[in-house]
Length: 401
Image 1 (cartoon, rainbow, N blue to C red):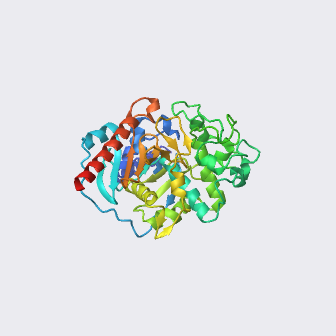
Image 2 (tube, one colour):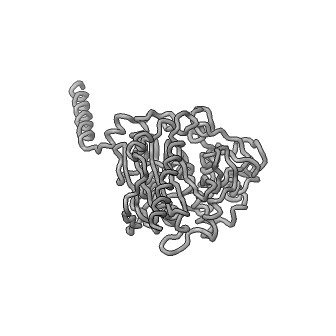
Image 3 (cartoon, one colour):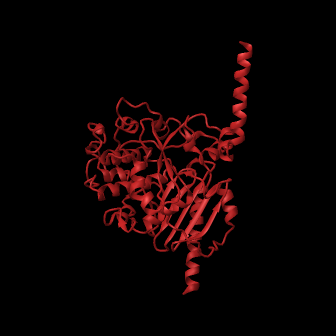
């Protein structure tokens, strides 16, 4: 018996040595900084550094679905280097930025990487995924799966009938004006945003639907804006129910393949097998930038409109006032007063789109905290960087004229 046990131990040790020797550097980093639970809000900085580039390769914590790219890649030609007017390397270090891609007038004007990340890797999106999800609503309307944003949410998610969402429209869900009570405090382990993903769903019910249908109302539908990640998950459940397709396949079909994304992406799944559509889409920084170009170009892929006429204008118009100074909210887009709009995710993920300057800025980071509300000023400094880039583009335009 003793020899048998020793033999098993020798085999296990040998297997471990072989695995470590053949593992790539990202896998080694993950193994030495493995998160111990699913709640990313309370991981350490080293754990996030390791997992944000590998979250779709942690089967013990997450399951994911592939968003397939096609064979034809949307070319991103290099333009002249943009003189931003500041030390970009120092900015990225302070921001803990993994990837930064600036595209102006269809050309890459700046592309840099940090945190030992590269253009070949995938980084998680967090709430940047919300803007992808809302865009799929537009695609589903264009395809005839959804009649109108004025339809009731419960018409497409029958398990919400009789709940507080019974009188909420798709438009109110998209603009986060449902009037449903919700706590999005990332520092509070008892907040809705911290608890809903771990909720144990009732048999046969999507986990988000199961959690959300038990919530209470705090104001009439349409009267008040409150940021609710759970509601974007409901948007995803609605698109899946209407199209009878999972979000990953639908995103691949409508945008990822026909527009020419460079790499496969992935989308993390909830406990009941649906994409966590308010979060957790993994892609390369260049492909996040390409999505910005897709939107900037009017939502056209392979020469065909993917979205209804006027969808992007409506989606990126300020439809609700927010609690953040200077920002309004559209269909899961953050709207500024000057026609600029953003997809934003915690810990420093973002896509800024500036139509007037034909500008897209995609960035992936691992800030020390989720948002400035938890301390720090990374979001404020990133906004200042955006302004610096816009100023640099404007200066160039004056010189050319």
